[in-house]
Image 1 (cartoon, rainbow, N blue to C red):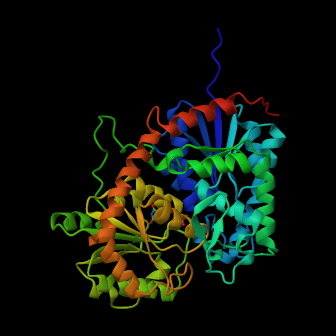
Image 2: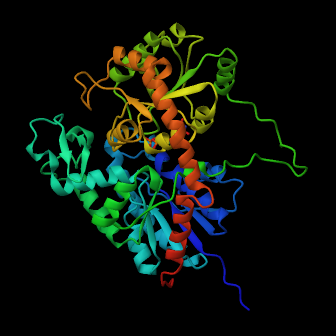
Length: 474
Ligand code: UDP
């Protein structure tokens, strides 16, 4: 009797924090199902990827990243290190130079059953087609936002409204309204053109040739949108998350099973420990790895946090630190902590002292907050974050919203609004309501990932689906 080798999945994340992290979690989930997983990355990202997966039986391989890309400084191989977001399309285009290295690698690897790659790595579809390997596409967002963007592109729902803030109904979903300002270009444009549109069209062409879309969400969270997508668009969406529930990496242990060294807690966790013993609940503030709030917005948030009189921990990018204004840290000393390093966000959110999250609503942050039962104060900044904020507040009910003056989706949120809503989230009736709700939803999210849960079952079907697809590598 011959024993056939386990399926072999090649996972290629796009080089952006919010895109890479969930696919590394998914890699771990696949590996736990006895699938051989090879993760592809680039040299500058290799050690971070490797250390995330250090205790997993997952191979990590890097392929060279091109040099001399306009707007992309040498050595920058991840989008959150780009000097500004205007270089984003250049960065995405530069990834095309990875194609020969990727294809050479596929030739040398043991038979590949499936490629899971980010939607921004458009050319990986050509490679998959050439080798006749099924490719699953991944976008890092939820199916609600994907569906709304497609509906907007198809029906131009904002064609009849007088302003970008005037609400319009969404066909098929009478219970809510959106505005043009809930969308970024090209979706909010009536006559889109230029590189942004071309990039989108190429993504959609590749997507149509893929054999499915892996979504970091779960069916019970957004059943109507999942069904609407599968009925009207495609490729078929498989909701198999939230991936952040994947078990945390095991601690590094020595041969005797004893930790090789006692790792000291980061200072911010020690600070949270103190807050917990003093019974002073803390708001966690972070706008993710990518979005850049304007200097004015950062200053309003700072003044609002100061006025709120609540305890908070604010993680900011080093280059934004000076924009907050001198003297801020001194004025909030003891009550507020500003951290300008990379933190383990899940570790902060899980800390018992943390009872609220002022967030830009990046989808990973939303899921992480949900899974640990922490409600959100939503301050979206870019990409699909405005849609995510609507989902958090209006659909799921696990958060409150910060609005710019006039309750508009874009514009600077003032300090008084920040202060008022921070107090409401931490102490008010609205806060109690969303805190109760997020704990219920969080339980369902974790349940979806357990054996027999919707995402676990869907992942099993997805694996069967790709394993039964006929393929042969050249
Ligand atoms: N993150 C982190 N530490 C930080 C900043 C971000 O661990 O200091 C993680 C966060 O937990 C999340 C990801 O980076 O998994 C950010 O993804 P998200 O979709 O929330 O936002 P993006 O950065 O893509 O805007």
